[in-house]
Length: 127
Picture 1 (cartoon, rainbow, N blue to C red):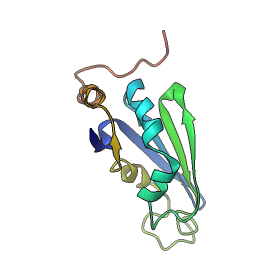
Picture 2 (picture 1 turned 90 degrees about the vertical axis):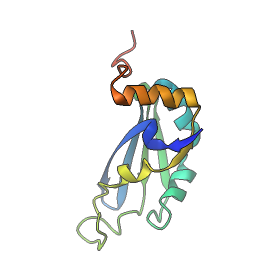
Picture 3 (picture 1 turned 135 degrees about the vertical axis):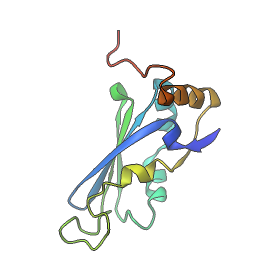
């Protein structure tokens, strides 16, 4: 099923100069598998079209069920020289969560239960 990324992950973002840094953390190991396939550098660049003028790099962190993206040339030169409203990249995390991703219904439902507190989240360490 097609859902917003926010149904199966959460995000954090920040910046360094003219590069936005966006971390996407899956709510479950099963969700992570689908995010690796769905949230590609090309799709992230397309999602931030008009904002991201440079390359998008992706780094996989499977032990954290996370993906980290660097969106180069996305902040109008950076905080001190940009006329952009958010030249520090703080809203990029919220922005990426509106991306549509294809994830099986059972995985989405399991993530919904984790989000609502009905089920505990993933363990902090492998047992």
